[in-house]
Length: 244
Image (tube, rainbow, N blue to C red):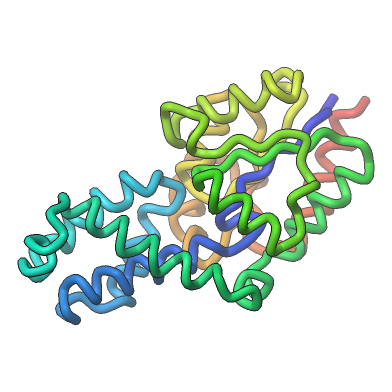
């Protein structure tokens, strides 16, 4: 019997992944002095959705590091991944400082499911690879800060998704076992983490993750939802089917 629904944040409840992709793109465009174009990086980011910021920065530097103008490196006295993260975070914070932006990127059908299961008495958890400071700010802006029984962020785990640590910790905190939970994810990395934890996962895709998730072969197509309008019905029917 299902007792808890666990949600990812970025790309699942709000399309912050798109904003993050553009923040990396703008940062590399600046650091390369336009040798790298923002949209190039956004396209590359599709393969990195769900990874930690350190992993994303490392992989983007492997691809675009040679284009970074040396004067930026000398003046900052940081490693290239550190330089990219710092520049990108400044851009991202500026994006979030505009309270009108995030509501435009909220995933209303996914949020509807969250509110519905909470009203029905299910435990709810949020397991995200974003850091606590950003998570608090995002949840406040989209008015979901009081919708979870437990929140675990990147700051509280040693290993990022696709490692199952964050989901195993969530089971403990919600006091449910793996057969009593469902996870709502959007990325291959998150899906792998859920599966490694032995928990049923529904993959609700977005423009950044759709192709990779559908081509991954790691999850039965019955659990992939490409049209978010069908998410609540599908999840609630599954819960109902396991109740008996």
